Length: 460
Length: 114
View (cartoon, rainbow over the protein chains, first blue to last red):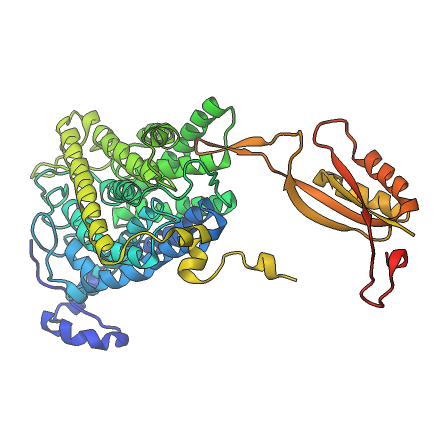
């Protein structure tokens, strides 16, 4: 799977890296420029920006509104911190471990310090855009995935422990999962010859199952917040969450349609499916809530939208728009059930429902992808002569469902084992949870020495 | 001349009409405070992602007036007539004696300071 390292066009600012890169050679520079499709590159850069928009401000607002007033800044900062931390990690080693050539489970160290990741396309991944566009686009996924986990340990984790945990998690859980599903030679890769080709268009297993299941382990490991579930802990501002959810929806077009890695028809298909899945899930969640409580709520509607976006993520580039409606509707009802019922049965304090929405939605989405994937939308499997082979169960390929379960199982096991071991290690080193008095005071003051709404008292 | 403090806890929606009615009968100053509380009116439930919360302390407005005694009956009648709907939750009025009053600006004492 190795290929000649591609060329470099170095911005003047990267002088420090020239030494590292110089050995890769720059001879292909002129020819590579001609293979770049300007429309593809424009769309992929916009998509990368859209995916970043999902973390900040999208997820930061969504989660920030759901916590109590005394934790709003700490919660928002946890998402924002990923934008800085994971970016630096990605540049140093994360990208290489995820997408560099390696074994079936994890990438190698060929691309550390972005060595060999230049402006010529990496034809294994995306033949018409610079490798750096692909790299920065994938970075945005690596940022939002750990940020999603923060919802589970909201209002009680030490900031320092969170940073250490996320650093290790990015390298030990995210990078191998991304490599197995999307990396060249990955065990589950459907496009590049994996042992168990699984269909995950934009990150149902890689992003949502890993983050959601890890979230559950975090919630169990840290224990519930002081006072939970006796003390009321309603969201301090559903308004903030509302704005955040709407930004997530918009950003998700970059997440899913961008995963076509081209501005082609497949991107349109993924775009339409993404929108349809979200819309149907709003109806699914709201209807379930309406039946049970006699009212449809704003928080329910936006939660349903996010659940639908999660579930359609693995399917976005493989299914028809009508299947997207079914997937969304199913996910909306299912995630409502997980959040409103199952959580209280088991008594874990998944504070902002990272597992109930992302873990559960990602899993149901991965299964439904195996059912509804069709070669009429995306001929991912084909004969040597190019004729399409069946994709999912609707095409008659029941085996795909088995592959989906293998991928789901691996994602769950990796998330459970990896997260538990990392938490244990971080706990031994510096402790994961804030002292009780800090928790009562709120993380904004105790961890960061500031308050989100200080002006309420001081304005005069 | 003796003075009385009127503390009226009322529905927030009644603040404006009460304020206007009191100004009309010659009440010159008042202090209002946003408070939460409940009497016989119990709260309501809110549901967030399936979790029910009982909100039993509802937002109310507390109006504080200190008046010379001869004004008190009229002021109380005015407040009652404007805020009464006949339903639970209309609020309450408390009266108490005031021992002294001082105007900070010029050190006036007693009812002239009101």
